Image (cartoon, rainbow, N blue to C red; front, top):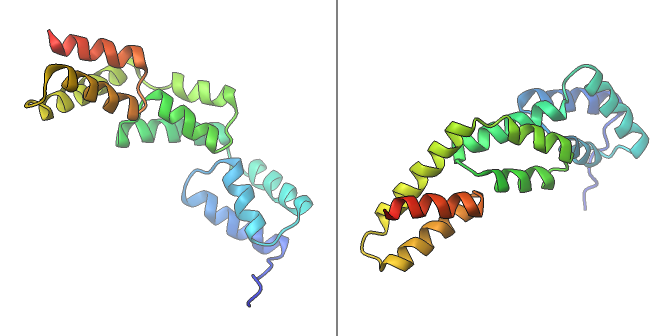
Length: 157
């Protein structure tokens, strides 16, 4: 078996700066990456402190970009974005901040667009099945139950 190469603190700092400058990262992602470099806890903490000071790592910036990107590109709802940010170890305060940053009008427009598209796809379905599948689809995308139900009921009429 080959042993994984253990990086020095300076080598790890250089590599992690590149890792963080390529894409926004959460603290947990960076910490996990540093542990794969073979660093010890004290070294990991020092490296993280250094990259935070140099503004390579900013969890608020990460949360805002993650939420905005997932909403615009994948058209995820707030619930799914919230869950994914929790999985990445982002604090509840920053999650709330990121979700508040989503434009309400754009959010509702996207919800209506997705609901309308799904509703049209299910044209041959029985009315109740069509309604149920559309709501299920919206819930799977991470939209709130109340909003999904209200939107589908608007589509019915």
